[in-house]
Length: 275
Image 1 (cartoon, one colour):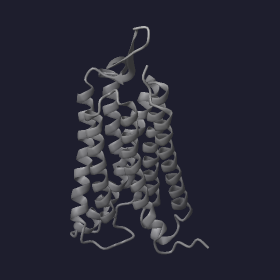
Image 2 (image 1 turned 120 degrees about the vertical axis):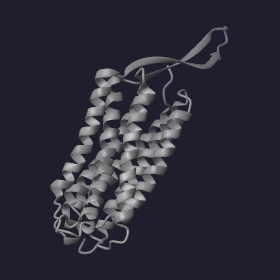
Image 3 (image 1 turned 30 degrees about the vertical axis):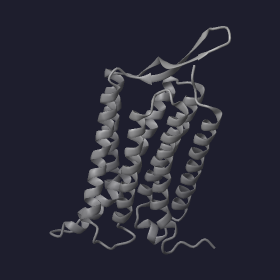
Image 4 (image 1 turned 90 degrees about the horizontal axis):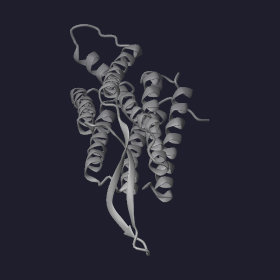
């Protein structure tokens, strides 16, 4: 059976662990300084949800690494999928909700609009409910199962015997369809993010407005997402090490960049004193 090498597992796992530690540190600082006016105006609860989403994305990379190195297990396959989808929705959904609030407040000039943090949490919850419905449909209609793939590579040994390389994978009968549905739904969120960021581009309320950040996050997520999708469909299934390293790098870089953009500007903002 083919599995990932120890080198690729250490590289992927190490990057994922570093990203998770960075996220935990950023979340801790966000909660510790949550009463500082600059951070309080930026909804520390929603920031925590964003951090939790990035943490789940890093966790999905750790699970992917373990799965590739030890051999696929059905429970780990589901855990990886759940962490990645939920993590994306929490992270990007939180950014999207905050920018939607700015759009509603500053574009609705006819009446005073008050949007509290629980409204933003409801937006994130709605996105998570859509994810839950899609995952439930996948589990009921076309649940993934373990399958053994025979690879084309063959090695001859001295006595003339042939060694066949096989790979255990998790797959469903309509895997391409389900991947398309998941990617399509996330792409819709990206489009909404671009729209709200563009609509609020001229608003200058630094502690409240994340339109500039979401613009960079959308660009970062789009680029890394496109790279990840291309790698997912273009790389041969037998290229275990290459797939593992490149896919985990895409997810880890995207998540870590989001953490630095969302939390870094808050920690370096007005009113935060370390001494």
